[in-house]
Structures are given as C-alpha cells and as structure tokens.
Length: 557
Image 1 (cartoon, rainbow, N blue to C red):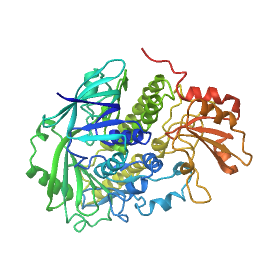
Image 2 (image 1 turned 120 degrees about the vertical axis):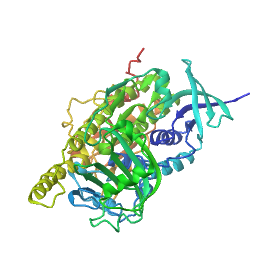
Image 3 (image 1 turned 90 degrees about the horizontal axis):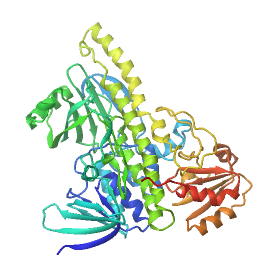
Image 4 (image 1 turned 135 degrees about the horizontal axis):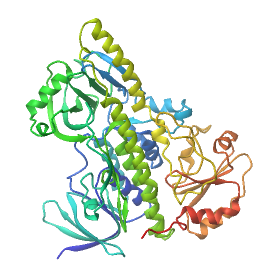
C-alpha cells in the first residue's frame, strides 16, 4: 500500500520557478512538496542571464551576493561581442561591469538604472544550486528529485495526486490544497488541464528561428587562441553560419549554440559534426571536449491561454515559451513564483479569500505576453539581419560590409542587452488588487525606464546615506512607507492590519528627495515589492487593505 503525504502545495518541477516558489512558501511556513524527474539540479547551462529585477528579488531573500559570486570569476569580462568568427574580426561590443565591479557601479548610476542591483551573467546550473540550497533550509519544504507527478485530480476541495519515483519502485499519494505546474515546456500539468498555447511560433530567421544545436563543451584553448578582448558572450555573424557562445566558468567551459538550416538533418548530427561546426564558428581547428549536446527550437513566442484552472496553477516554461533573446524566459519564471508565493500563503493562512489567487492570472498573463513580445522583437532585430557575402573579404568591399555590420550590430546589442525598461517596467495596472490613484505610468519602452510610484509597478529605488538600498528597509511582508520629515499618523493602517492578521511594518524615511520621488507621504508596498497604494488619507486604511488582499476580486466560474 502506498503511503499518503498531506501538504499545502504540491510543486511539479524543480527549475528556477519551482525552486523559487518553494523558497517563497517555505519562508512563510507553508508546507510543500517539490518533485522533479531529474536526478538533481540542472547539468546543462541553459539560461545564462539574471536580470537586475531578478537580482533584486534575490537580494530581498538575502542571497544576491551568493548568486553574484557564482559562475564567472569576479574580474571576468561580462561584455557581449559580435564577430565574423569567435577568433575573427570584431564588429561590435557592449562593455559591461564585471561581477566584482557591479555592486560599486550601481551606486553611481541613476535614471533608467536607479536600482539596488545590476544584472549578473551566470549559468542557470549555478543559480539552481543556490536556489536548491535555500529551499532545503526551509523546514516546511520537502524536495524529491528523481520523482515525477503521474496523475492528479482537482476535487474542488483540494488536490488528489500521485507521484512516483522515476525507477518505478515507489509511489506516493499526495493530498494538497493547491498544485503548481512548473514542469517545463512539455508540461504534463498543462496538457492534463487541456490548456492551449496562445501567441505564435515557427518563426524562421537566419538566426534565432528554427532548429538550433546546443553543445556544452570544454575548450581549454579558447581564450589563448582568441586575439579579441575577453567577453562573456560572443556572437558570430557571417554569411556562412550564425552562432553564439557563452562562457560558463570563465576558464574552459562554454555553451555553444549554432543555427541549423535543415530542421530534420539537425536531429541526425553527431559529435563529429559538432566539432566541425565549432571549428567553423571559431575560425580555425581547435580541440574541444563535448560534455553534452542537444537540439532545441528557436522561434517561440507562446503564452498559455490560462495560468489557472481551479486549484491548479502554471508557472515558468509551462506557462510561457520564449526565444531566448534578451534572456527573459528564466527571469519571467522567477517573477511568476514571486507573485504566486505570497498569494498562496495569504490564502492558506486565512489572511485573504481564495479570490486573491485569481489575481495571479490577471497580473502575470499580460506580463508574459509583453515579455515574449519583447523577446520576439530582439530575435527579429538580430535574426533578420543579412550578413553581406563579402563580409570576411580582405578588400574595400569587405571593409565597407564590416562597417555596415558594425554600425547595425552596435545598435542591436544595446537594443537587446541594455533593457532597463523591460527589466523594471513590468506593471499590473489593470489588476483588481491594485488601488489606482488616477495617475498614469510613463509609456512602456524596452531601453529606457522612468522610476515612478504610480500603483501597480516596482517602487522607485534610492540609496540611503548609510549605504543601504531603500529596498533593504522594506519588510518581508507588507510595508507602509511613510515619507517626509513629518511622520504621518499610521494608527488606522496598523489597527486595520492587526484586525485582518496582516503582517505590516511601518518604515519612516525623512528624506525630502524620497518623498518627491514617491509623490505621496504614504505608500503601501506588497510582499513582492510592488506599489499597491499611495496617498494621504489614512481613513482609507481598511478599504485599501481589503482590496489589496483580494476581497474585491470576483471569482471566475
């Protein structure tokens, strides 16, 4: 007889979304079980860019410094370079701070990059190790790798599920209040629910459209044989092939991806083919040790038509599929977990009605559509660029072709990799749990961001005289930010919060500059560091807290 385990939340999938959700729930003492068919965290590099907003969430949880210490050596370049071949002629470059320089650099930045953290270049395989360690530290979290969800039923009152060890020797009945499918692009959870993809796929481009070959490899001589300045990511642009490579450890490990013209033939490629293709991309014969190789499909901009059905939710790749330009897939997945975590905990603790959970779909679905759209724009920008036939020629025509390519690619690299608007500008303006104040946020734009405290978005950032980030003063749950030299009477908010069992902390900042930044003396910050309300009238306290906790959300049939 199989045993039964009772938990609050069953999480299918141990990638960034599932692990982040386990941390968010575990910190709030919500009992959950995470299962993943893999034997452990990711072996292959997968995603390679942690955006600044994701780093701010890691900072909120106390381990951004751990993530920033992982991956590349601290003084390794994080530049993105475009070349005719990896060891060929450089065409364009975006220079960025190293991991060691980033914490100091961000303190001198303002405007679009007014933030607590800069992005970090690190392979997902390292990020998952860190997330796994922090999930393991949560007493209420149990993780079983080498186990998979085999069936589930939403009974209306809960989830009746079965999980089984991959070797088939053990199975377990799981009784949960909720199920979260963070089980990847081929999500068993999404398929069982019958939720279709919306959006578009099948884009064909010279690059980032169609079958790609991915090779995780060691190339000990890569840097010694490369005459160009060191970079984190090298992109090959020439009329013969299109490829890119990212440094995994800054020493010898790399993630190599090359666009293939024939989807069917790509599946038959051998290690001999991979070595030949890598040598072509490098520009000369070079020894490599292949650690793994696989094919994948670029050209997706897909979003599940629904992120929720009853007591079941979707997150990460189960909910949205990206072409990886801009590095938005993994970062969107992390924010799914951040958004859903505090809401599940609030409902399970009886602090909010079940209707609060409907706001997950209402907030995250539009963001996924937005972000997949941006990724598609970046893919078009690089993938539809035509490399002139004479690009590598040692001739006046070749020189002219390289000048044209250089001009275009220097523009493109900034369009794709300098994206504070994408990173910080995601908003939940239409959400029923945001208390609007009649103001409108600045227009959404990929490459610029205007800090703005209009409810529904990320709070404006500021550095404090003692060197801390304003964000470091926020409570782990709800924060009532009181601004200006005169401290407003917050008794009504504190009493209303106590009556509703809401964990609220009042934080007073006397700075007139921060008051001017927020344009109101009181600002309510959600647990996921989103502005929920701002204003002057404390008499609204009970109504405000009721709305932000979902008491005004109409439950969908």
